[in-house]
Length: 125
Length: 252
Image (cartoon, rainbow over all chains, first blue to last red; front, top):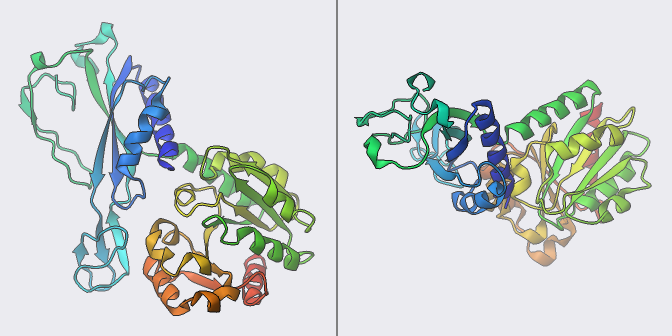
């Protein structure tokens, strides 16, 4: 369950950004979780409310975007979408792959609540 | 309001320039949304950024002192502490070693490793199933005393979680005992694909267990083509010479 540590890191990073941006609150947190990142989206969903409790992210929605694995074969040079857990080239069966996507673990975006006085200010977006 | 960008447009799409695909067209009207006004901020920040930064600091600190640090990861009971006991005994007075032992609870490991000529510090992680870079950074100055060349970080026994947390080590070492089964490298690829070295332990049990060494080697290569592998029994000493030679060469 290292998803709890990941969720704690996520909450901490989201709150840091929200403070830096002068937000009134965090409506939603979007994370990118690659299929090869070793993080289970369901476990992350479960851990998130626990990590967010008593923080400015307690009421935030968690949006998880998953990224399918992509790899380039070092032997035949072709692209494929290798499955978890073993990246095997779909064309030649080689195991020597260069993973180009699927290992992401990112705080991708935040939906921040705008403080009342600046709400609707077109210059703030 | 648009949840993507906070604008009031009725219909639009958002282009963006990173690699993964996702659908972004959406339709909406301003009146449909209730609650406070919001705006979208693109962050694109790696998670565990803080851990990674502290890990980089640890790595630089160790490099300045010429210390090679190994992050030993395995399931509980696969022989990390026994391997370290024998290793410290054999390197005593030859290579100056230090050990950070991580467990959820107790200082049993640290006690077993004491008195072998190497400073040992125990970290109790309590609820956490892995060590973090921050925990390691707090004990580094205490355990890496003058002259230490080799630091063993014995992670919490767990084949999954510790693999995700960089501690600032030079490289990860995955241990796998014969009692666990030949296919663990393919069942837990997140560790084996990140470890530079694998140590197969408890080889003295191979006959009783019907251990299929070639099969395990094949699985290891599948999980991590080119992984460096040692096969040994810390109990009988079989295969220990190659491991000890390797450690001496690392610090030569």
